[in-house]
Length: 307
Image (cartoon, rainbow, N blue to C red; front, side):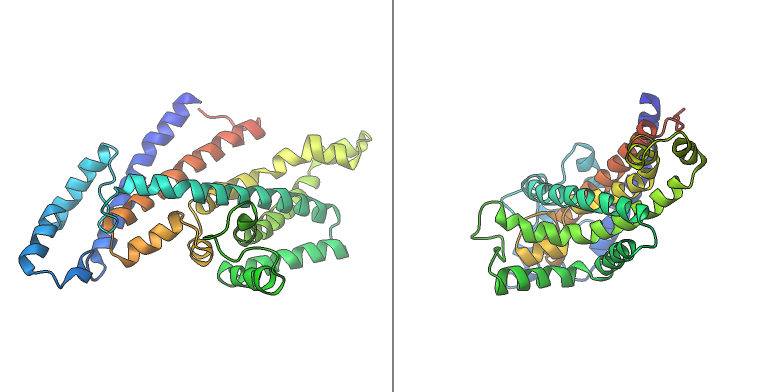
């Protein structure tokens, strides 16, 4: 297993390098620059600022310099938040995204997986159709629409929950953003779990368990649940990475100072190092979570062996 993990990590290096190179080219290809709003400065001062950040050098030289700095674990300084470097900004923003995304994924799993199992056990009944209709609705409505609707209903009309993040404290401010993030994931997990559970329940070993007189609860718990969770694991790998790194829409709507909000501001301000730092952080997180999913496959399914 240790050898497998090491080979996977080494194999991820070319992928990560390609992501860094493409992101570097894309952010530098965008029109404008990080100091465009400072055109009122004399040209010589602007030239000095660019020279200080090495933005006056050819692009290949800038990329090489960035890779050398990155190899030392340094994401570089932020062009807009000049009191901080990119590592400090990510370190300050990620805990908010982690807390918000962790609660959202826990809620999605706590609701979506049982709902999918229940729908599979009540296949083609009114309950099954209701769960699947609700799931399709959750998938169809984007977060861009869902989040303002939640604010309108629960914050404006009912006045039960705070509408924004700033000026509020306590657990109540987490409710609406967590719901907005979790609802689409609940829908996806419910549909995936239903389809997977139906497939597993039709397997020969389940028929054998029924023939031995086992009840439905025992069959689900001891025989069907683990193999039915394998497609869920495959989905959760990238899904958890997306949620943990923050939703741009949710963080912007609720004013949460997470990675998503920093990414949007960095892109708008042409803050090259901030955008690159968040992209690299996100890509690394996706690679590690997918590796974790592969390892959990072997834990859940004893037929999986890593050479």
